[in-house]
Each structure stands twice: as structure tokens, then as C-alpha cells.
Amino acid sequence: MALRFEILGRFNRARAAQLTLPHFVCQTPLFMPVGTQGTIKGLTTSQLEEIGCQIILGNTYHLALRPTSELIDELGGLHKFMNWTRALLTDSGGFQMVSLLHLADITEKGVTFQSPVDGKPMLLTPEESIEIQNRIGADIIMALDDVVRTTITGPRIEEAMYRTLRWIDRCIAAHKRPNEQNLFGIVQGGLDPALRDICVKGLVDRNLPGYAIGGLSGGEDKNSFWRVVAQCTAALPEDKPRYVMGVGYPLDIVVCSALGADMYDCVYPTRTARFGTALVPEGVLKLKHRAMADDTRPIDPTCTCMVCKNYTRAYIHCLVTKDAMGSQLLSYHNLYYMMKLSRDLHSSIVEGRFPEFVRGFLQNMFPEGDVPEWVCNAMEVAGIDICSCCAPFSSSQD
Image (cartoon, rainbow, N blue to C red; front, side, top):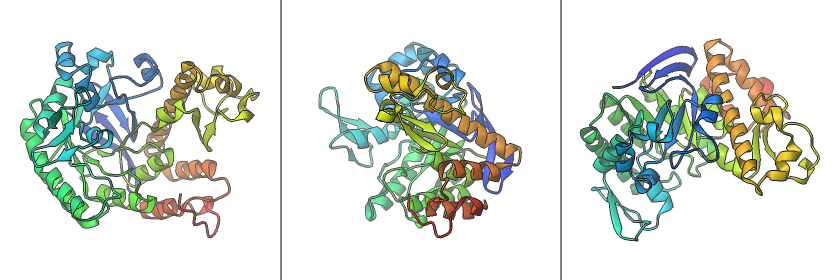
């Protein structure tokens, strides 16, 4: 095992920890931006350090296609290749094949898919996924799992969960660098509590360095989403990191952290930036709107990032979707917002003021008191009193 996980503070289920990885000492809860091709679109590694980014996620599938894992290995690993001295996490490549490619066929052997290069069938096995990730050299590597969207029901969910457990043993056996790279298992089981439970127990028996909750953020309703997170975090070991995959909405991160999760990743903050949307305490600000054309205020008057200190909404409105600079500035601001949210979650838990932080966050986002019902339900389970934020009889779903 190449990590240390030390809990520094708690509030009920929420925890703030120090996660020591081979390349960086991280503070959790933490958000990881997605750098598909070994880059966060439009930002340099020094800018990412400047805004407090601790771990970047790389996509194994994209990196294996270009520039290839062999070349990355030859050039000294992904850290050196992209000039990033802090921590890296790579996914297994399975999700991309299922979501991006037609005719991905999953069998016991692995995932068969059409090569985007020449259309020929290719097979990604658990062994090959780990071999590629061993060459790339990230601090955390993910097991290949059988990915099924949560909106699917029936026997396929059960089949995928049991296959994920069989594949974890193949991943463990193939992992050649356990003292330098941490292999995380992924809890599957759709929205079925019994299947999730079997999967958690099976993975915990393997005593892995950390655990991810997979198969969410695929279109399931929010009530189902938080209940799966609550169930898995309650059953996973206290002394290991818990990573909810594909979660990037600030509200979801606050709720999941209250329920005891530690790590998150998503393309949302940077993708929404490229569409001209900024993250602000009130929710989002659409810079493309005509009202922004002569607005001389910063994106967020309370934000201390380089963008908010130097540029107006009017200027960014002028650039947005027309000039690369617009999406670069918005990506910088949005990731700064996410890193500050992570730091605020961490410090509020350590300093014993987490409930106050949550209430302040919800009051900013829902000044009318229309906090969604699923958030109220989740906070009740998390033991956080948010009555002062909610108008009576609020029952909106999202």
C-alpha cells in the first residue's frame, strides 16, 4: 500500500483527512479536475498548482490511444511527461469504451470494442488495463469494472456486480507496482441495496488501499443517488479513502461530504466553462446572457481568484465561445471555486463548524428556502440541522 489516510476531524459522518500519496500530501474532502489527455484544457500545470489543485485525473483510454502508455513510460511516466509534480489518478478505461464507442461488448474476458483508429475489434482485459496504468505511473489506479448505467434494471446489474468482483482479483494479480501505486476497487450494484452490499463486502475483504462508489451520475434520480452514497459510505472502512466517481456539482459534493465521502471527479466545472457558465455561490452565472454585455462587476465579488480580481463580466461576455481566452478564464475561475469549496469543507470539519458551513452554503444557493427535498432528506441522515434554510413544505425534486 502506497498511501496513508489520517482523519483530522469529524462531524457525524463527515470527515476531513490528510491523504498522503507518493507525489503529494492531500487534504480531503477534495475535488479532482479531469485532464483527459494529460491536460486540463486551457490551463498550465503551474496555474493548477496556483489554484490549489491536489490530484488530476487522467483517462487511461485516451492516453493509451495517444500518445500511448509505452511512450509515456519511456519518457519517465505521466508526471514527468506533463510536468505535474503533485498526485495523479487514472481511471481504468472501461467507462470511456462503454460511453464513447458503439458496439462495446462486455464478456468475462474483458471489454471488446471497435478501435477508433482503424475500426478493428480490440479487447481491454483487467490485466491490460492495470498494465497500461502501471506504465502511466499515477498515484492511484482504478480497477477495470463492468460499467452499467444506473438507469438500467434487471439481471444485467447483478451480472455486472459479480463480474466486477471477479475482475478485481485479476486486477490485484496483474498489479506490478503496489508499493508505488494504489489500486482502488469500485463498488457497483446499480440502485439495488442488496447488490451494493454484496459488492462492498467483497471489495472490503480484498483489503484495498481505497474504494470508489461507481455507477452513479448516470441519470438516476437524486433520491436514489444520495441513498446509494449513504449506504456505501456507511459500510466502507473508516480508515480508507472513499471516492464518489463522476460527481462535480457543488451541491452534490457538499451532500456527499456530509454523508462521509472524501474524493470526487467530474468534467463539469471545465466543460460548463467552455459553454460560458461560471460557478458562483448562488449557483451559476451565464456569461453569454445579453445582460452581461455592460456589467462591470467581477464574476463573483466574493472570489479572490486571478480572473475575478482582473476581469469584468462584460469582458468575459465579449470573449465567451468566440475566443479561447474566454473558456480559459472561466475554467480557471470554476476550478478555483471547486478548490476553495474543497478547502472550506476540510477546514469547517476540522474547526468544528461544518453544520454552519452547510447552512451558509444552502442559504446562498437557495435564498428563498426552496432547498430540494432530496437534500433535506440526505442532511437528516447526515445529522445536520438545516431547518433554518428551508421554507415550509418545500418539495422540489432537483
